[in-house]
Amino acid sequence: MAAVVGAKRSPSEPHFSPFGNAIRATSYAVFQYLRRHATRAVRRSVLRTILPDIGRSPLQFAQLMKRTLWAFGVAPFVPGLLFGLTCALHAQLHRGEISGTAPALGGFVVGFMFASLVAGAIAWTLGLLVFLTLRTLRWEGWLAYSLAGIFLGAAYAFATRQDRAGAGLAFYLAAFCFFGLTASATFWAIRRPRLRKFSSPVLHATDPVVLELKAELRALDAMPIATRDERTRWYAAAERFRTRLHSDWRSIYDSLPHELEHYLSDPDIRAKDPAYAEYQRHLLSLLLTPEPPLPPSGSNVA
Image 1 (cartoon, helix red, strand yellow):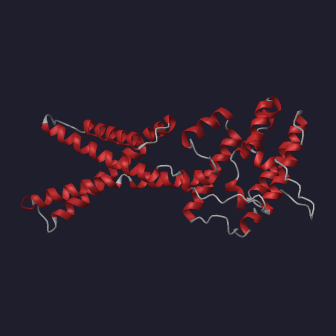
Image 2 (cartoon, one colour):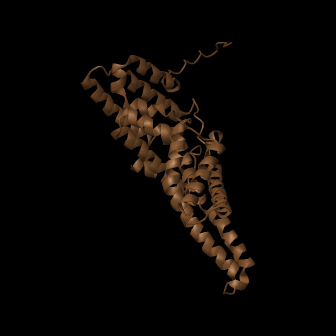
Image 3 (cartoon, helix red, strand yellow):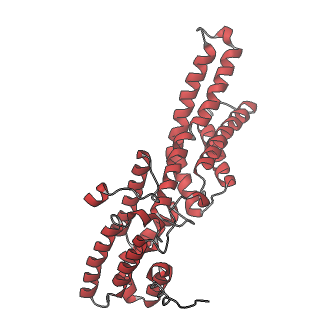
C-alpha cells in the first residue's frame, strides 16, 4: 500500500480528478467483489448488463460510470427547466390575477423545483429499471431511449390525470410525453458510449515495465496447476502478481486486456478445460508470447 500511495505518477498515466478517482476506486471494488464472491455465471451476467460491447477495462468502466451518474443527475433538470418556463409564462399572462411583485419569477422557481423533484424521483426508480432493461437488451440507440422517455412521461400523466378528459387530457398527456422525451434525450446524449474516446495509455512492447510484467506472467503461466496443491501454490503466486499489478505496474494497468483478471482467477477451470485454457492464452497472447531474440550484431536483416 505504501508503494501505491508514495509512487509518482507516470507521464503516460492518465490524470483523474478527485471525483474521477472515487469512481475509479468504486469500479475497481465492484470488479474485485465480483471476482471473489460471485460465480462465473453471475459475473458474466452482471458485466453483460452494465458493460456490454466494450473492452471492459476498469478505466473504461470508470469513465462509463461517471457519465452515467452525470446523466442521471442532469437529465431531471431539463423537464424542470421547461416546466418552470411554462409556469413563468402562465404567471406572466395572468399577472393581474396573481399577487406578488414578480409572479413570473416565482412561477419559474416553483415550477422548476417541483418538476425537477418529480423527474428525479421517476429517474431514480422507474427510470433506473428501464435503463437496466435497455442495457440487458443492448438497445443503445437514441430511438430506444426516446421511446422509454415518452413511456415514462405518459405513465406519469395517466397516474396524475385526475378528472381530465377529452382535449384537456390529450394536452396534459402530450406535455408530459414531451417532458419525458427531453429528459431521456438528454440522458442519452450525456451517457451514450463513446468507444473511440477512451483514453487508455498505449502499451509499448519495449517499455521496461511491460517487459517485466510479461516475464512474470510467463513464469506464472509455466507453473503446473493439475493438482490441488499445485493450484494452491499457483494462487499464492498469482496474488503476489496481482499486488505488483496494482503497485509496480499500475501505470500500464488500464492498457492491459481485462481477460488478465479472469486468467488470475480461473486456474481451476483451466485445469479441467484445456480448450478454455487455450482460449485464455490466445486472448493474452500479446503478454505470453516470448520476446523474439535480437539478431546478432553485424548481421543483415531483410
